Amino acid sequence: MAVQIGIQLYSVRDALAADPEATLNALADLGFTRFEGANHRARTEDGIGFGIPADFLADIQRERGVEIIGCQINPLELDRLPQVLDFQEKIGNPRIGCDIEFYPYGDIEYVKRRAEFFNEVGRQCAERGMGFFYHNHFQEFQRFGDRTVYDMLLEYTDPELVAFELDTYWAYRGGADPLQLFRDHGDRFVMIHQKDFPKDHHQPLDVFDGVLAADATITMKTFDEVVKPDGFTEVGTGTLPIQEIIDAVDTLPNFKYVLLEQDYAPGLELDSVTISRDAFTRYANVDW
Image (cartoon, rainbow, N blue to C red; front, side, top):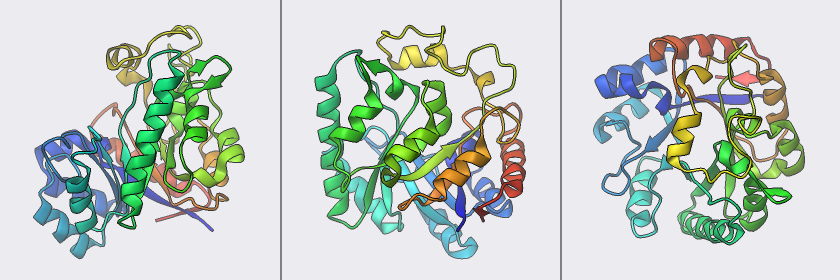
């Protein structure tokens, strides 16, 4: 077996804003034909985000063999969900996911309410033959007592309705071990996001190791204060055990895709994506 490589389009958001058609064609030229969207205007707009015209999306799917394999939706709201799913179903996207979530420190009841919300989203997706996945950042690995928020989400969501897309970088930055998560909950994961952490960075890998208090209430403001653009680097140039991660997910029963996501690029986005693409071609057990 081999894992299939794709890309989260957030990695080239500035290039897409300048010229979506040229950027998607450039990604296809690099060998990326599995795209994950991120619609950050889902309250008022359908689509996969980044100003990509629906007619061009259909053209590139047909002409370049591109697949839309997922789309993050923000905000994720039940009253808009039918329209969101109508569009995603029309373009052949098999799954949607959440974009970013925050949890007031220590509020386990809030975690339970969000888990039930995700179950309901998953239920509506399943009625259409689609899937729903949960996407993480570092804050889900904050401990509320003896358990992390992520532990609770795994427990309180229905495995038949909610899958997980583990962002391995953010898991490490929250002090978690993705390899252990794969061992403990392997059947829950359908995709991962993969990026890398720079060597000799001024922050520790684990943000709860002196960067952020263990009992902090984490909000978008807190997140932006902690996360720095220089805390990201291209795949294969940093410290994360990427081959071990690939080997681990290749054994998981429901796993589909390893998706490159470059939150911030040291230089031009497409140049960074090319460096990461070249690194992926050198890893074992990958398929383009």
